[in-house]
Length: 221
Image (tube, rainbow, N blue to C red; front, side, top):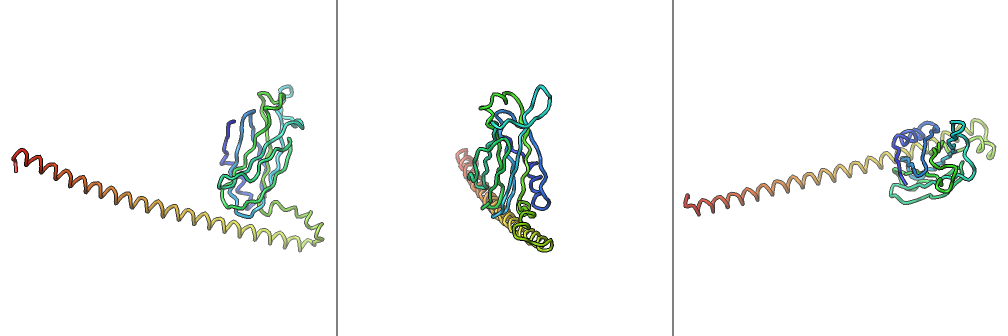
C-alpha cells in the first residue's frame, strides 16, 4: 500500500488553531494511503469529518459513494503510538484527544480491495478537521445549559483563552526541544573539533618520528 504524507495539509489544519477550520478534499487510488501531519497541543480534542465520492465513468463526474465502501482511519501520536484505528463507512466522523504535544499523523485509506465497483477508479475524500474550541457545538451547549447570548459569548471567550494557553505551552515545549537539540549539536561539534585536533597532533608527532627514523637510517642526521 502506498503512503503519501501531505505536509501542506498540515499547514491548512494548523490554521484551525486560530481560525475555524476549512474543509479540503483529496483523491486516493485503490491501494493508496494518505497521511496528514497535524501539530496539536496536549489535552486537545480533535474532531474529523469526511465524506467520499466515487468516480463515475458514465457521467464523467464524482458521485456519492455506495454504503459498502468504507474508510479506515488511523491516528498516531508523536511517539508513533496508535491512538485510533477504526473502520468507518463511506461518510464518517472520528474523534480523539491528544495526550502528547507534537505532530500527529492522520491516515486514511479505503477498503477498495473488497469493492469491485472501485476497480481502477479514483475516490475523492472531503475532509474537515476541527481542533480545540472549534470542536464545540455552541448552539447545542446554549440550548442544553440554557445560556443567554452574553453567557454563551463569555463561554466562547473562555474556551478560546484556554486553547491559546495550550498553544503557548506547546510553543514553549517546542522551543525547549529546539534548544536542547541545538545544545546537543553544539556539544557534538565541539567534541568532534577536539577529536580532529588531537588526531592532527598525533599524526604530526608520528610523521616527525617517522622522518627522524628515516633520516637516521640514511645517516643524513
